[in-house]
Amino acid sequence: GIALAFILDQLDNRLKTSEEVEQYLKLPNLAVAPDFAMLHGAMGSRRRLNSLRRALLGSGGMASQPLNSHFHQPGKGEVYRSIRTALLFSRAGSPPRKVLVTSAIEGEGKTWTVIHTALAFAQTGGRTLLIDADLRRAQCHEVLGVMKSVGLSEVLVGQLEPEEAIVYDGKLFLLPAGARVPNPAELLTSARMLQVLQVLSASYEHILLDSAPLMYASDTVGVATMVDGVVLVAGAETPKQSVRRASERLAFAGANVLGVVLNRVDIHHPDYREYSRYYFSYEKVEEISGTACDDQRRAEVAN
Image (cartoon, rainbow, N blue to C red; front, top):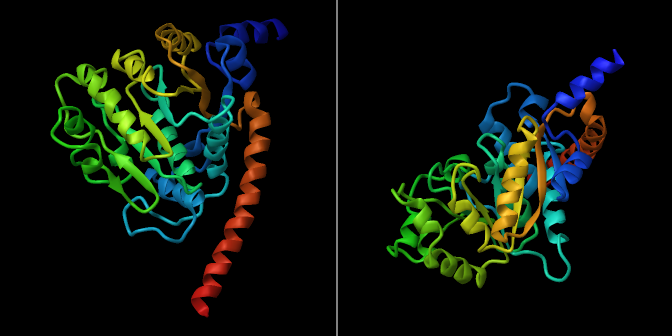
C-alpha cells in the first residue's frame, strides 16, 4: 500500500501545493484559488460572476451597467484581494503598474483571474484599466457583459486613440480586444503597442492585461517584455512541464515573472486540506460581513 501510494505520487504530473510551485518553478506562489464552480455546485456562471463582483466591489456609486451587480458571494473576494496584495508587494520600491496575466495553455482560468484581480484593484479607488490583449479569442467583454465593440485592434492600426475605445462603468475601465485581425502577432509586438501602454500609464494607476496562452501565441512573450511584470496562471490539472516551459520562455525573453497563481484547485481534496481551512474561515467572515451590510442597506431604505 505504501509503495503503491509512493509510485502514484511520483506519477502525478500536477502542481498541487504552493511548495511544489516554488520548488519546481523557482517562482513565488501568489495565491491558491479554489474551483468555485465545484464548491458551489451547478450555479450558473453569470450568477457566480455577479456574486463575486458584489464581494469585490460592494455597493454604492456604481452606474447601472451589466458588470455592476450587488449579489453577495462569501469567501471568493478574498482570493483576488490576496493576489492584489501579493502584486503590490512583489518588488521593492513602487509596485508594478502594468501587469500581464497569462497561462501556458487554454482552460487554466487566466481570463477569470485577470478580470477579478482588476476588480480587486478597482476596489482600492485607484483608476484601474483592464486590457483584453487576446486578439485571437477575446473574452473579457463577454464575461463582463459588455457589447462587442471597437477596442485594442482599432487602436493598434491607428483608427482610434486609446481613450476612444475604452468602456467605463463607474469603477473599472475596459479596453476590449476589438475586431478580429489577420495579424495579431504583428500588432501586439509593434512599436504602437508599446506607445499605447506608455500613454495609458499616464492616466491609470493600475493596468492589467489578458493575453493568449503562451504555448499557442508568440506575441504574448513580446507583450510580456513591455509590461512591469507577468503573472502565470496554472490550472490544477495542467501538466507541470507545460507550466515550466512557459515560465522558461518568459525568462528567456527577459520578462519579469512576478509569480504563479495556482488555480481551480479542488480544496476538498486531501492535497489541499490547508487551503480548505483558509478558504472557509474567510467565507464565514465575509458571510457575517455581507449579512451586516445587507441589514444596513435595509435599514437605510426603511428610513
